[in-house]
Length: 326
Image 1: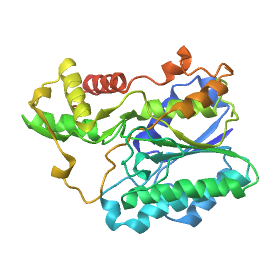
Image 2: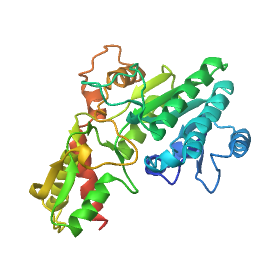
Image 3: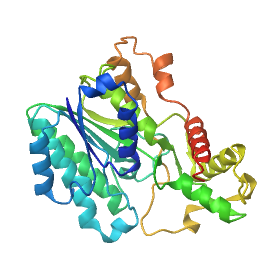
């Protein structure tokens, strides 16, 4: 089977490379995986993208690429829409007309954050900034492409606060904690930190069998985040404490991380105040994909696939410390 992974230089793309590299070599040898970054294909160039798809002819397309410069997008809307909307539309059109599977990744920024509880997949999109609008357009384009196509299947995974091998909020906080004795972090925006490694593994649990064969699943949008919720302030405090527990010397301690309001830290692009997303739909799809017809969301196996966000963050920080990356 041929697999095409876009976004190889990003946190999620690197997570897919890590995942496949750690699998049984005999199974992986039966697959042909091509990892694509900006050097191999400019996603803003539609002709280049179409040529790559036609030449490689993948049966599984994983779009881990995205324009993610949230503030910069306010002045680079054309580029943001080219990468976040037009490129996934072209990938989806190929998959829908060549009986391929398409995995695409979206964001909590498609919502305005005004809902009190957890967002459901069917809740109305109402993005606040250009980045969110470009991702929302991308979602709609993928759905349209498969509705008009002749086959294939797709999953759009909405996620939030991703961290992995690369620049992210956690690593920024730990760097600042080494430099400063006191930090001010927003405490009134809520969401779920998501490990790129976890997200890659969970995605493939839905799409691939243990023998790395494609599985059938209901096409649609799925919310994909670990269990629990927190604020940026809560995440910062846990990251700093985890680093201290791992023996890292920091100037700032959790008690010195002061909670501030989002309005007191203005940014060019608005952010949703509530990014919490319900994952029951994805849990149900995974139950069905594992052959369990009990439809029980309390099943031990499924619950193990959605660990608490804080446990994943603690593991991540411990790994950074072990590699002297803090």
